[in-house]
Image (cartoon, rainbow, N blue to C red):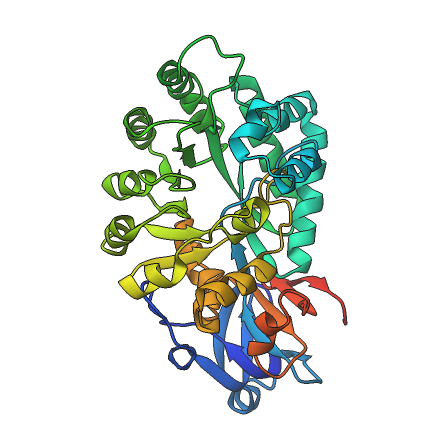
Length: 415
């Protein structure tokens, strides 16, 4: 067994331990240890508490001393990204700013199909390298777990290529990658059949291979007018559940409806929700489905934000993710996006922290991370500041000086 280590002292350890999964949060509600320390044992946290007491009782341990003011938060979790892709959609961005709509751009050869064509041409090795580079960028920003979707292949072979690239990248990255199959992103233009036939083709031919090769345990679908409607999506997702997959849904981005199906089928999460109204908010709040806000898409498309304040006040569980993708959300800076969402939706810093840590973990059905507490993964970020409020105040510009992943220093600027 690895030797235990004591690390501290910290001005604050924002543990988030025993914080509620659902509903609004005030800053006074979250667990914070002042002048604290952490004991690591292998990949896990053994103990968290007062630095003076832990140091006194464990003076035999290896000691990592923090010699300046610093605070510690759980490792950040980005629970919705598309960082496996090739090509650029800078042309789309320029056309949007010139007044073209999302649908108009798609009809002009841009949009998702443009990225599909570039991604199909890329080799698995090229895709793997791109994932690793983006994951390393995220790690430097404190993100220790990243969900990564396929969905730019849209054929059996190309979806498998993407998911295999994600698997290879995960083995080469320090950041942990959680793969999701989004073969139901849109119906590919070169598929000879309708939307229903395409989903039947994918579920019959791709699902068994995904299980056989252990490429993912998660299935996603884009429910929208230009993608897939409610009825055929229901059939597809039921087949996914019958195969033993967890499910999530791109829901209510431009029109409502997908979130209701997410609740009906007990999906892990409903992501986007920019078009959710009072009926959808009520349904989500009365369910166990995690609502995932994607402010990067709102910024990229110039549309309304997810109604985060209303969701939280109604009692929903709100996670926040970057949606990093080459089209609608090319920034990929989660903390910056969360800070902006907080400004416009009037979210407390406690709600922002919960949304990018333990509530994001719940959206991925991960129970072993998201808080700094005994027996959780030793994933945490250290910032050279004296109060956690500074993180969102600086809107992504205050970066962690040290990032721990699985009990080891994974990124460091000062050590």
